[in-house]
Image (cartoon, rainbow over all chains, first blue to last red; front, top):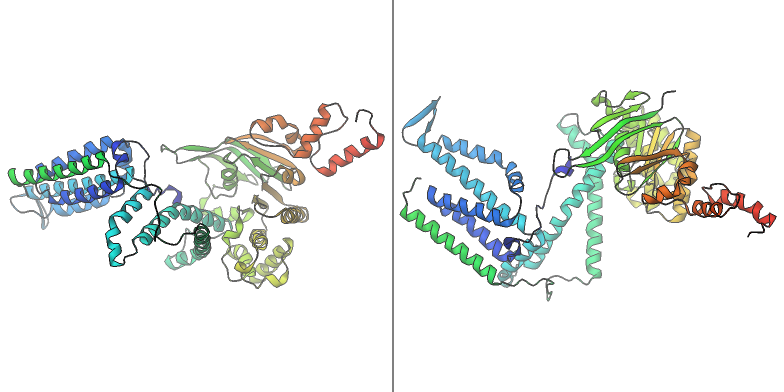
Length: 270
Length: 288
């Protein structure tokens, strides 16, 4: 049931990647995603993949966890690469009806698959090594220049933190209410679409009621502790960039340089 | 005689086959007869909740069987709803499950799912409301207007209205004030006596269990530790304490007195203790 869904996949540890400033990690992840699209031949993409694997090893998170995060998107990877299989020019290798597979198409398919996989793996490194709180904190700090444009940066970050915090709570609550209604004979497994939607009412109404109650209680608790938005608020954990973070950023820049050099000096495949 | 409810080597494992595998219930075999009042106790995480949810088919056992009147409840998984009508279950904090516009309609939800005739639904709902002591003028109110204790009663009435042969209550008095606990417990006991059905009461309050249960089922670390008459279970006070459970305070005091050589028997309630001690005091026992 809903209990089997895992959300917030933070994997605590003390690797150098765990210790990095979340801002640096966030920036580097965004940069890497861009790099993956900058890389336009097998050499540069291969290089990025190797770098991703090395970072995965450094992160100290079991490889199994990475595989698990891949499971969900395996279908998307297969779907896009199969589609690409048929979009190629050049000599035809296999002909299926009006569709044809060319050597170029196969290359395309592999290239796309590697791209998506390394994209997911790299963002997994971020989510595995950074707790949701660190992540929202980093976003708040990185977006702080927007404050001058009257964007409520702190409020947005706070809302994200609260939303993330309550996802498991609500799932648990849903589970409980569903069990209680089933015990009263609610039938949620059979019937047509309309009937199934109707059978959700006994679950949704209590869920809404308790969500509002929780929201109200939380607001009250926050006010009791004199919360009044981001104005003049200080942080318990002030983010400081240290040598490690600068090294990481330099490393990011170096990777970009290598990718561009490989793009220019080695034969372009696609 | 065929037991009303029986489990055979019941096991349940959460997340089987994953690294988070956890055995919640292991090899539990019990027989529960018609008309019994059974207290279920155990430390948090001992497998009580999982066990009772298997009894009404909310959780399907990993292995082993649950027999209701001698028939495996999972014989035909499509008919599992019928089992849930016979084995009623009131969850912890059941007031969270109310959703209808009026109290009466909410109590009718269970019987309506049983596809009973409208007149029967109405009759059962009103009878159930009476059993839990809900005054008539509350029945047309929205359940969300009621107080916590009243909501709890509405939720319990919603299960009683299905007229189950077995009623399972998971900590029905949690979070109520002492007076509320007392009243609700008496109402449940009263209902049990009048209706003559089987009740399973999960509770952390040993005093409550000692007061109402005829037999006590003790779960410990996913295993069945004991299932015996209430006096016999609470007489094993050292064993209970070793698994993190307490015996009622009065039982403890009386056991202590017995240990010091006073002619007293195991007591479960203050009334019993008074009955034993008064003659001794009147006689003016010279050891006192």
